[in-house]
Length: 242
Length: 359
Image 1 (cartoon, helix red, strand yellow):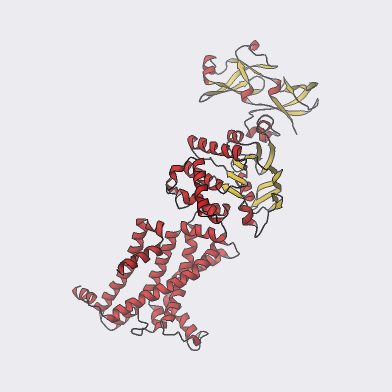
Image 2: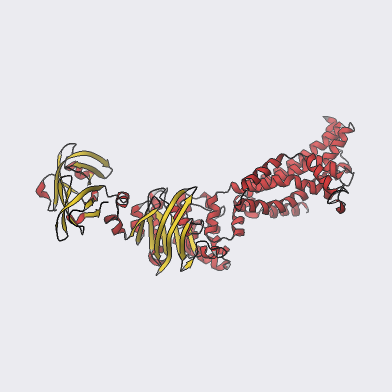
């Protein structure tokens, strides 16, 4: 246990760099996924069309898509012979972000739909009856479901930061370039550096824990109601910056 | 002037017919109440008028324009109306935000929003609740917020779907006061649905009776309650004595109607020999211990079959060759020492009877 603790307090720049990249890749893929899934999920929820139930079922079944399968798909797309081979993204951060976004998109979209489903239909109908346009009505629904939406972001981020298959297969685990905490843990375990792997695992968990506790405390304090999460995070960042 | 014209409106959900050929004309500046039992289709009718649903067939003309299946203009039409739903709905924000949202969506100036919201808050008696979280209010307060939110946009047509259902009597009274004020003072065209008949009578200029998806009668409250057009309407509006009979004699408008061997004198245009229903409201029947205590044309002797106390009133069921239901005050029932099987006289005026043709 002592050796794990020693490893944890003496983690070097390689590990911190991997941790930073884990955060960066997960956050970027999460933002991309939100930008795609939020409007698409809204469309799916608020529009009526044939096969809607089937589409939602397919999305839900994609929640448990193995990361290695996504890695394989991205690899096939980005390899030289693949349809997107000309982009030259294979074994680059872009490939990992692309893969992670693809991995979490079904979850995000499903959770957007699920968050909207939790909003009392009479609330959106009341907005519509008071003359809200479609976009204004969606804003009302988002406000009603903001905690569920926030949970969606947390789950998407957590899934992205904790995946291994994609980062390994399409990132290539290149030090100071595409190595993330999960690929580093895998590598250290294979090298027999179990204590170091444990320390990295704990660091990964701590990162996830800090993010979750921050968001939970924001929710609980009720400040989200007045300020919105992004404004509040901005304030915190400003405060940390001095 | 007809403001809203509903023609042959039908709505079917999952092959179940909810509305069947509803026709209704609503004049500008008047208050209408649609009354009917639960499940009659009142909410469906209100939702169709508010363009939240599309009818299976029929037409809705709003201010002379067919809006039944309006596409892009649907929202602009809807912005001329406001709906208050049965369940008190408030958004996750404070009272001011809730009331202001309709104005914000119409891109009103901030100062105009503030003054309009403050004015309407005063109107519904919630000036002190301006900054309260709307979700922490009681059901009655939430409903007043919902009404204020609808009123602040100054709708040309205010739709109220059972606005006081499931609320306590104090809240109902406050909400009725607000509605009475806007109906009388603002001359807003109002269409409300309710299963509370006295409420419809108190607030509306005209009442429409919707039963089982069919609009059976439209008329003044007096017409609906005293001259129901058919048996279903009569039963719904509380005419408990509906007796089948035949016109057995006629002298000008005064008719003798034979009901179960007893002759009832009533005023009717129906001809000799017609099969009819004789309708008498329980409140129009007077009970006395002696025959000569009443000057009414119709006096029948009978024995009490049933006594049902209803708080301040007591319901009496009398068997006098035909069943007659009436009410007396509980104090009178006690003073008259009414008991089961005791002899009693029931009397009612010929003018208190409504006669309709029986198919």
